[in-house]
Structures are given as C-alpha cells and as structure tokens.
Image (tube, rainbow, N blue to C red; front, side, top):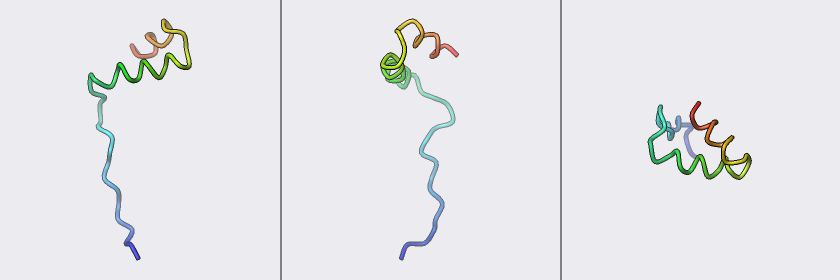
Amino acid sequence: MKKNTPKADIWPEEPEEHDYPAAQDYLELLFVSDEAKKLLKN
C-alpha cells in the first residue's frame, strides 16, 4: 500500500514565453482571434 505523500508542484509560479502561443491557439477555439488576443494581454 502506498503512503500518502504530498505531490510536488508541477506548475511554475509564472508562465514562460513559450506558453503564450499555445494559450492563444486554445483560446481561439473558444473566441474570435481579436478577443483571444485581448485575453492574453491581461
């Protein structure tokens, strides 16, 4: 039986530059391109 050990944090405190294009691609599935770009700026 496994012991209950805390999981390590898998997400960094701040996003890295290479994360933004992927986020924009995802948001453009949900919103028009201009709206997705506005969301990324915030």
